[in-house]
Length: 191
Image 1 (cartoon, rainbow, N blue to C red):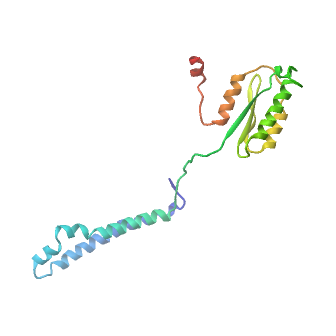
Image 2 (tube, rainbow, N blue to C red; image 1 turned 135 degrees about the horizontal axis):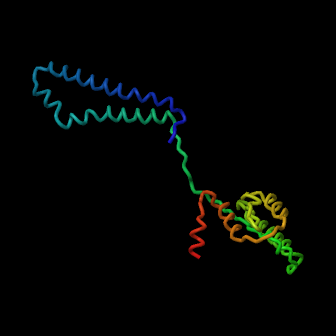
Image 3 (cartoon, one colour; image 1 turned 180 degrees about the vertical axis):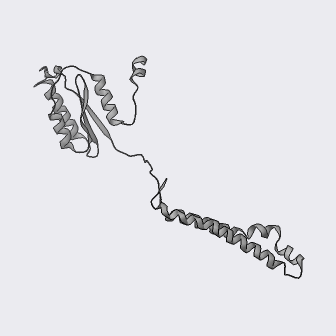
């Protein structure tokens, strides 16, 4: 927790001063009580229940004063709240095998057309990113709600050599979860 106005916390030094003044007033009051003619009357007035209850209002006042001074200093804290947003990463193969024409007009053109229709069918609040993979994987478009940027990234694909599907998946996951460290050794040992 931080304070927006921490220089006002010096007002908390008034609390010990007020406690000292209160204790001095209690001492002075005891001396004044000794002036009564009958000490039995003083003992009855200062019975066990009275002794505790008479300190409650000053203690509540000091507590309220401390809280007020802390509030004046404007405490602030960063609170991470869960957010409700959907993120989709399109992992697209841009290897040389996408030149094949077994799908009209070519595999890459068919994949781009399918990606265009998929992007168009998504709700406007869904963030979409694009990862292209061949020998290596790269983020072509970071997740965004701007459909024109996503479609432009899909249209800019350049075919390359190699096919690293695992790298494409790993870069996609890292794009969605940037704070998570993925241990590839545990994955390769488990498989």
